[in-house]
Image 1: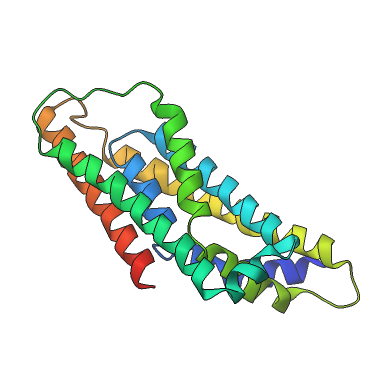
Image 2: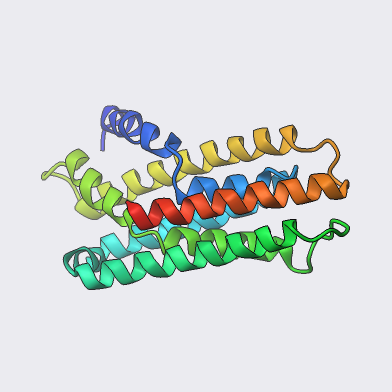
Length: 203
């Protein structure tokens, strides 16, 4: 695959990557408390979820999911419920006074939740399904072209989300251990996740 095609694909998908969606909102909810590491782990989880989407498309399973409205809707609503559950936990915590405590296993939780947020968002598969074929040529290896384009998409996502995590974490570092600040961060984070759930439900 020639570099001009990859560049054109990058220019096409980058505005989509920059558009706030459930994945970006989840990453923002993790980083906004001043914890860049949590944002980066969430980014790694989301990008791993995108790898699963790539494999599903490669094996043709995405076609089955897209062709079945019931299955597509089921995956989408599981994602909505999961995000709403995470939002509820954060909002409940924000309403209770107390010291800011980093829960045990939080590092693994950020990655796992990011992974589930991406995997349970079937729109990711639609991006691959709708866009990748437009940049693939009949003369070359379909699998190889799909792999190059998928890696390009995931790399752009990783770079943008990592930068976003750094910016939000830097903006939120002051007053990290203040209980009022902790409650504000958790309330905003819960609101972001609730917005992500609503967006996934409505789209």
